[in-house]
Amino acid sequence: MQLQVVAGCVHPETGDPTAFWFSDRYWDIRRRGPSSVLADVLTIQEVIKSPARRFRGLKRPGKDEAFALVGRPKKRWDINDDGEPVEVPLEGNTLFVVYLDEDLRIFNHAWIELDHYSPGRSAADAENDFVKKCFESEIDL
Image (cartoon, rainbow, N blue to C red; front, top):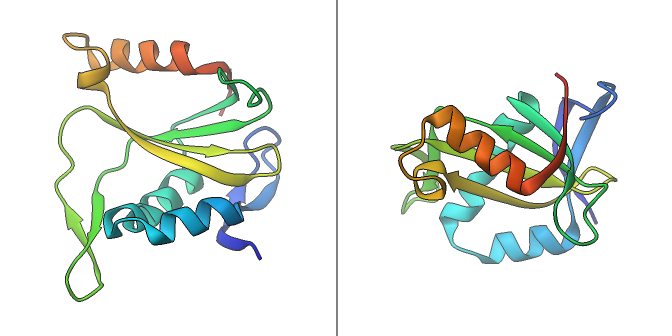
């Protein structure tokens, strides 16, 4: 079974309307993890609807056809004791990356703290350092 994340998205390369999906393995791992990881589903939805940058090809074996959608979310989420999502402070120079395979199934996501990635660099330079290390080519928006 596949879980649809959200409709109303566009294909990273073609711009055609589409929906993104969690891979079965990814969803199984994430739903058993800490609640803060499951709360990231809200941020995943924000980033895939409106990415700041899009990439094709990850610099990892077997991922040359994968996509990465990168955003700068305005907030971060956690789950409170009642099981409800709550906003938590988002500090520092942070990117959120959603990784999709060529069939548009989400297989991972990550918060990237650029201040730790490239200490002492400007926000733009730190982001470009990260991009050059991780991705093959950028797709124009």
